[in-house]
Image (cartoon, rainbow, N blue to C red; front, side, top):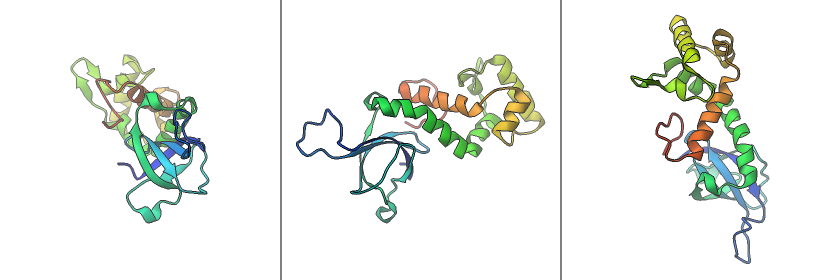
Length: 181
């Protein structure tokens, strides 16, 4: 499980579908590296806003705003607010961990004789894939800006975020590049 997650939605009164008399506040979060959706219970008096990075790891002493992770949820259980916040949060994660995703552009390999893993990125076609491969053979990309400049693609971080969203929306996606389980 991830040690950190990002807040997608904060439900101060819990879910409307919860029929308990005493409603528990809930936070809908997404794991930073495995991209698992979770429902968590915030600590009393915790101040949380959408987009916040929160610690959810095993060390209880470090948990300053999250009391417990209640359960894992699926994409279909996200609130409308969480769904609308998801692309921005994913893009932020990709930018903050750019070395991981830059490595993908520098090291991506074919999946089969007819398909390359780069082709799975939304908006990236065969011609661009070959441009990336040719450019990275000359010199590995050292930033998203370098990649954009040398290959003439706009916002590679959005391409990655869009692919992660596809993998999250469709649990049965045949090829998973970024989402675990």
